[in-house]
Amino acid sequence: MNFNWKKKAIAAVAGLSIVLTSACGNGGGSETSGEAAEIKYQDYPKTVKIGTASQGGTYFIVGGGLASLLEQKLDITANVEVTGGPVHNMQLTQAGEQDIGMVTLGPAYEGYTGTGEWTGGNKMEDVRIVFPMYTTPIHWWALEESGVKKIEDIKGQRVGVGPAGGTSGTYVPLIHEVLGLDTDNVQAGASDMASQQMDGQLDIIGYAAGIPISAVSEIEVQRKINFFGIDGEMRDKVIEKFPYFFPFTIPADTYTTLDKDIETIAMFNFGIVRKDANQDFVYDLVKAYHENHDMLVKTHVSMEEAVEEAIKINKDVPLHPGAIKYYEEKGIELPDSVYPPEMNKK
Image (cartoon, rainbow, N blue to C red; front, side, top):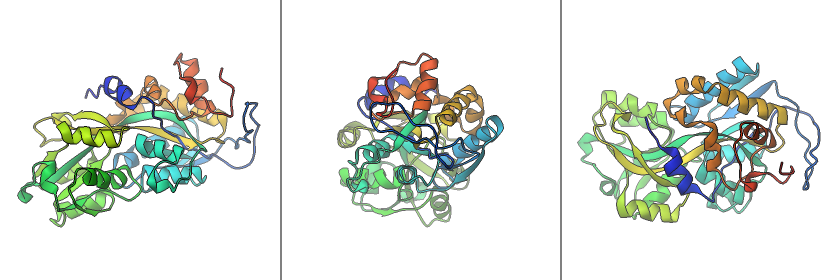
């Protein structure tokens, strides 16, 4: 699959940032010698919590692959936690209640800057980015028998939008609002929505995740469904309102019953940790992550995009010093804006 992330994602998200979260281990560690606030780094962890999203979504699958990598390559026990998704992961990481989180660009940027309505104006400035993941497009699908074939057809209807705290549950309702669709939004996890759709209880779902979404693959085996996205003036309107989205094409071979490309919108994903995560651990994590890329791709094909250069999609939100050390060693030129206040640049 050719997602062409460099051409589409970097151009579209310039000036925005992502965040990564990891409060690892217990106890204190060495302090930084940076110009700003000193930090007591945590001890190198023996076990970590990985915050993902609902079961049936791509985060949960990738989280399992990441857990296996940590256990096999770093001898660290990793527990994969079901969460509400990116918004929830930002909150949990900021609070130190999980060690590694997964976030999309919108919630990461809004959380770090405190600009999202869901933040209440509180900045989650203890979150740091550590590694790039993949593109998350939003697409909609409806039971064929419903007669819904395009985004305009969902106006005034009941639509599954994903769990509260996730990319879908946060942004799909806002997209519907921007487009004046006046939908009755049902918030639930991917697996729950899939079960409802297969049982004929829910005609339409709009969801954001790395593709292919396993829940969709399960549905199309049992029910005939129509896929659709947004394009043209409607897409332009959404991107103008939410500039961390960018245009994206879902290839026709993504699903068995999908016979044409879908034009839609997408965001990029990153892994996050807390700023006080142990520096050696973060370095080892990022090193193992990239050096065992094949393991992650076997977990989910969307992880083909998780290459070192993709870290440059983030322009403004700080990286963790442990991650910076790895990318500098690999010759990746990072913008000054991603160097955190707790360390000196180079």
